[in-house]
Image 1 (cartoon, one colour):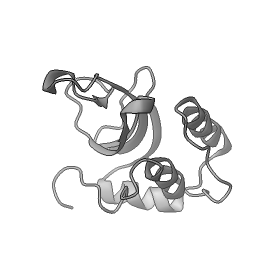
Image 2 (cartoon, rainbow, N blue to C red):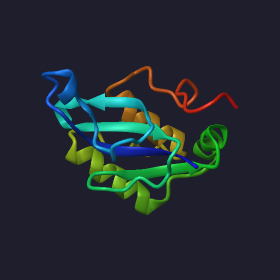
Image 3 (tube, rainbow, N blue to C red):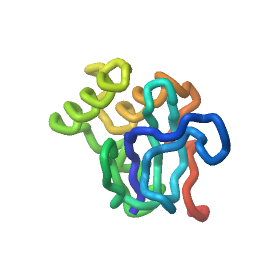
Image 4 (tube, one colour):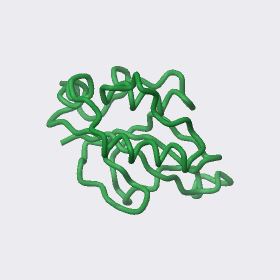
Length: 130
């Protein structure tokens, strides 16, 4: 199953071996929707919805990439998840979710577009074409 995550970043950006990158387990497949080294934060999509670790927050999942996008558009952000996203945003220097960010897609894009205005669940790609 695919998942969208908020996570911390690692690396100091001084060489290819220490490049800025999401702090996810080694070998994880992912695409970056937003990477912000100054705040040590990222938002990624991955074909693996079981990633865990310090600073990793799973937002929404789907059985396929198309299903994940559909879930993002149809599922509202529950109150406890909104609190987690707001706390993560505040801890990383971003604005918390506005009241209008009701669906997951709105919340994800609000977070990502604070750094990457081109972030889109429609443009991100993971795995073979569906």
